[in-house]
Length: 559
Image (tube, rainbow, N blue to C red):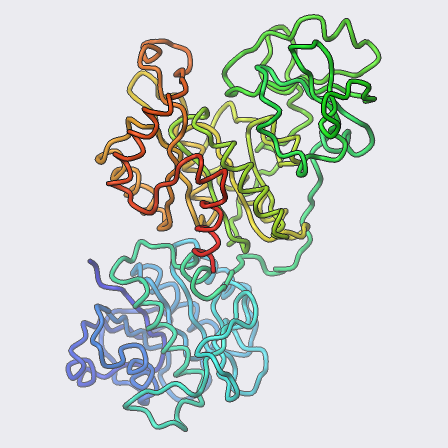
């Protein structure tokens, strides 16, 4: 484990103090308008009192960067703060403690605080004692720390970037009346965050701030700016007209959750009878509708043949093709593309995020996502789902076209911007991302873009729970490799679902997509027992998904 590097931009630490505390410290001070490395006698003991609050008495693995930005006891300038923060960024610290600030707004100060965010450096800043505007604490890209006399809990989140600390906290070496200082509270919180990093500085500090304290920092000056958001064209069509769907290949109607369907999707095509039947009235054939959506339910690169004679038998209805069909244009303009949401900025998202991924598109990922959507909706938890599977239209999921090219960092900015726009302009509680492709390439022949889209989401969003759909041939070494991979992105909660399908090894030599087949009940049980010994309570069966066991485990995790 590495030391956590904490910068104290303050009045300076004495060499005697650092020796007494036995803490590794580097000293810096301002000389002729620039920060230089070297020792300067502190102007008072303010920084040392703050360092006491950071270190407490448990001697954590912290390395202190003492950046003295005051040569006298006059008010600190914004230029000195900017120099101090820039030096801390250059030294690649993990946390910047600012138990001081200034009353003067500076766009340069805001910009350098954003630069710290971009480098995964959390700035913890003290609020004003008098309740006035104070910088950088009042910026939305730093954590503002306040103190409260009437607070029951130790920490209470005030808004997206402000946290209050109770004065009832017990610090052995500090008199109770001395805690009535946002300076000390700020340093205490910096030490708390450093301990949560637990010797792993590469963890995303802003994910930890969100998950542990519900703090959602923003790199926008106007954090309540209303961003442009519109429904995709396909839903504008559905709002004004009744629609029937044709699933190609056919999907068993019993697998759909009829209570959760889009209200204007009224019928499905029954291949056996050659007619459209009502979703709501069993075997009812006299259904009126204006449009027909013909949906390729397979992966984006699998081309299907148009179902015979539907176009000629239903000339009065307008037909739309969603997915890859031979001889017709895909109606991609009706659904979202990532290019629509291009942005170079990234913000911290606020809603909890569940991401469903796996080795392949045919490993029940959509089934798991749809069932969880139903479970949450049925329990009044409003859920927004992202999917690349066109049949998501029946549940009003936000559907994206699978990108022809996955270009970093463009796709990351696009995903983040779309999700931010949704959160600002829509009322919902939770995200489910039904990601396309696999979490990694399968073998050296079947590489495609596997893993790239999933990785884009890891960069763009703070994933709270990953649900990984696996097959029965998955071995222990593979599991450890994938767990390590997602842990590196700060994703620590992982559940596994054993798919009913597995790869057909014969198709591995094909230039087409890997093919899958459904396991027999006996083989499924054998594979499940084998994997259960490795994954224990984090492995779920398809029956666990259908019965609600997976949903209940998620609720207990989030609670």
